[in-house]
Image (tube, rainbow, N blue to C red):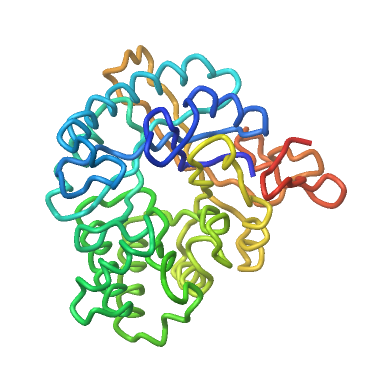
Length: 336
């Protein structure tokens, strides 16, 4: 697999990621990536939303976030130009929808002319991160109406629904992230009628909006049996005719392309034959104030023996069969 539309760096996500953005680009090129989408986390604007490592000086930590985002856009554009002959770089961000007033911030950030797309994600429920650690997950659970995982799941998918309505993201981030810290991440949520109804509702809305679900391999490196989204959700998405994109959600060099071979196998088991990527074409005279044209591109899961794209689109995923199959070292794809 030779692209990702979801990635982070320690340079601009210092609490959760590692490594400089340029070093990540160089590594992505070395393992054979054709396309990488930069999607650093958007700023947060409320002291309530800071992570534990940001609380030593909370006001200073909060005030540092918007200028860090601006610095990210400047560096991303420099790298986009510097490495244009070696890798196709898209510039985006991962949106936070912690509460409804986040929507205005997301829209404002998305208006920047060098931003090609954003990922619509939910990481917080009841103003508490649900993927940070078990204790915070429990705090969010206890803030739900019945203080159960079932009611937390309901609240998560309700917030996700609001996010979809307000933001209409091109890419929906880790659709079922709420299961990561669950007591039983592999549970069949169809047994929870209210949860399953909400999942189906959200999938239908995302499909109506022509959004994509990312198949996010990060779930595997975090110990889940399946990537995001899990099988029963992916099957429903396929029934709706929905499209998938492909992401490593890497937070540093060590996680670039992690578990891609396993994730391709997962997609094949679902009968998926293609995923979708974005292709950015600068407009004539683009100078940082004119938005580029971004088009959707279909990428086949399987290609010829050399891993090339049979239709010549230059964005192939590098999936090789038999003796040319992509090799893995601790789950990380390496170039053959």
